[in-house]
Image 1 (cartoon, one colour):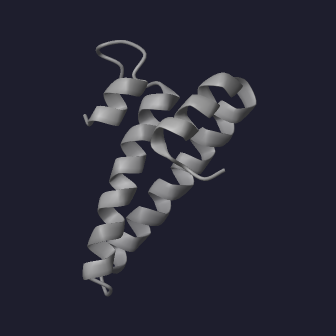
Image 2: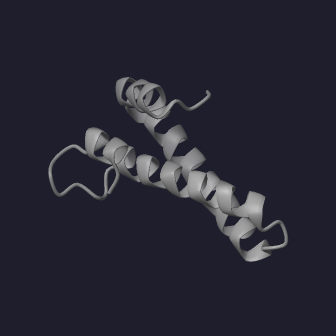
Length: 82
């Protein structure tokens, strides 16, 4: 659990909220991006990166549709483009 995830968590033991999941996926995406820049031929990690990006996109779409204020909060705290 990183700092951004703790900020976006709804309560202490929160692991399932969309906000928390987006924060965790964002840190995973950053780590995988760094890894893939070093190891360009690692196709398994690039597939994992693609899956993480798609899952985060779906969660962001869900938040935008159902909780607009929370969506805007997540976008600003994680410095995501949208």
